[in-house]
Length: 129
Image: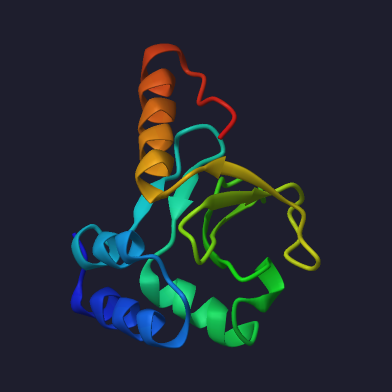
């Protein structure tokens, strides 16, 4: 469940960057996803971490206008574009990242995460998200 820190950070993100509304809704209610034991892990970072990273990198420009919102635990990062599309980096580095689309929006991304968890529980394979 989201805490007041994440809710405040989400509101700040909405003011300083083009953040999709569904991400703000996610941070207002859920806050984060931490599945460290599913494969290498799947993480949707808390809003406070996303805001900190946004401030450290001087805005979203380093991700082609997107914000890094999490990782797969294996070094690859997930970013959300201003249009809500979710991307994954091809390499562990955020310097000059190459991105692949993994979902059309946050809802689809969360559904893919859920499928990965279901697959992992069923047969120990987390998939390739």
